[in-house]
Amino acid sequence: MNEYPLSERRWRVPGMEEFGTVAMARVHDVERTRHAIETIVRVVGNDASESTAGGSQSLDRWTVISLLGGVESLCDYLGYVTEAMLEQADHASVSERKRVWRRRLLANGLLDELRAT
Image (cartoon, rainbow, N blue to C red; front, side, top):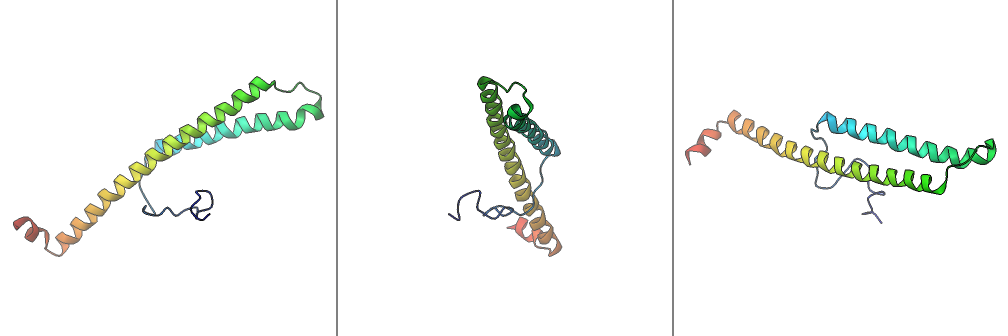
């Protein structure tokens, strides 16, 4: 049960750095997608709760199924964007570790010794 993705510690991913660098455009894509999902859920939820109370005509079944299919597609897109951000952050963290290691070697005067061998 501890290895199930929804029950793991929220901000910790084994084998990944705690911080990473990602493109802000991807973050904005996630934000826009979240707003789209929220809007679709609100439309379907309002229809389910208010159609009988307000006397208005409810959404037909095809419309509800299409809206829920849209949410599923948006979730797939979120998965794609998240995967791209994780890859970018991992690549950036590897590059940053190399830069830090190189700076440490330079500071200790060891880089020239390594180049000589």
